[in-house]
Image (cartoon, rainbow, N blue to C red; front, side, top):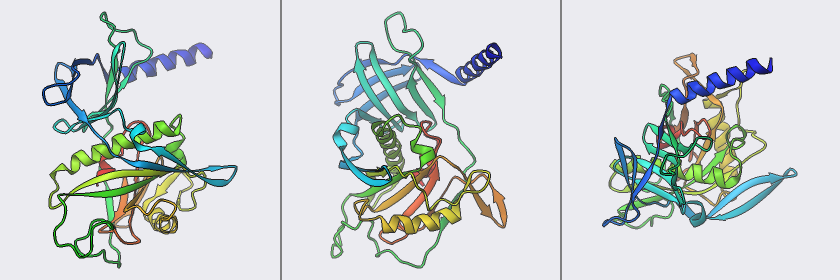
Length: 319
C-alpha cells in the first residue's frame, strides 16, 4: 500500500513538472544606466526591474489569540523591501540576491508565476533552478451590484480635498484585505501572507496603468486573519455564495472600519470556490463580486476567490 502511494505521488509530481518550465535566472546587470536590475529569466524573457513599493509605512494585522482580538503592526518597508516590477512585462517579483545568484518569487507576466525549486540540483555554474507555472485562468464571471448610496461626485479618496477642483496626477487608494481561514492558513507566517498580498496588489496597479485623469494606485494598509467568519454564506458542499456573503461582509467591514484604520476599500480574499446565481441558474463559475462606485460609501467592499500561493485571484482583484 505504501509503495503504491509512493508511486502515485511520483506520478503527480511528474505531471506537475510537465506543466511547468524549469529556468535558471541570471543577473545580467545589478544596476543598469537607468537604475534597473536586469535579469535573464530564459531566452524569451528578460526583465528590466525597478524597485516597487505598495505597502503603507505601517501595516496593521488583525488576529485572534485565545479568542481575543489582537492588532499587530509591521513596517511596510520591511515587507516589500525586495519587491521589484517590470511595468512593460507586467511582472512583479520578490528578488533576493545570494551566493547562488537570484531567487525570484511572484509574477513574471500576467499569466505566469515563478518560484525557486529547492529540491533540484543547481546548474553547472551554481545558479538556482526556478519553475515557471502558467496561472490557471478560469472563465470569468465577476458580478457588480448597484446600491442606493451615492459617493461624493468625482472624489476617489476621502483624503482628496472636497473643495479642490484640481485633482492630483495619482490618487492613492488605501486597501485593507481580509484573508479568510481557507486562504490565510496556507501561509507559513504573517510575513509570507503580507508579501504575497504585496505582489498581488502591485500586479493590480500595473494593470491600472491605462487609467488616467487621475491615475489610481492601490496601497496595502493591512490584513485581517479571522478565525470566526460570521459573514460567510457557505453551502453544505462548501461553496461560498457571492450575493449572500457580500451583503453580510459589507455590514461586517463597515462595523470594523475603525479597527481597519479607515481604509478606502476592503477586499475579502477567499480560499473557497465562489458560486453565484445568474438568471435564476446556479453557477460555480463565480469568481468575485463588488459594488459599483462603492468607494467613499458604506458599500466599499468586494470579494474574490484565490487559490493561496498561486495568484489565481489577481485578475479578480484588479476588477
